[in-house]
Image (tube, rainbow, N blue to C red; front, side, top):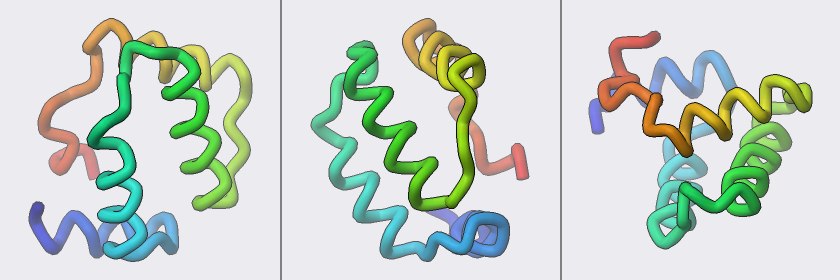
Length: 78
């Protein structure tokens, strides 16, 4: 991944590259059509960033992921 993306994410979230890569490694074997797995990932990210995620927003995120509505090129979103 592009180093600039990691820097942008770290600047916005205070989560460093190693933490991101560690989480990504954990997610490799995850089933992203499984709502339980998605809830766990969202909870962990919420905790890591110190941001609460409403139930409504959580459901929107899960629905988007399960329906393959997440853009492939998120790097350009920041």
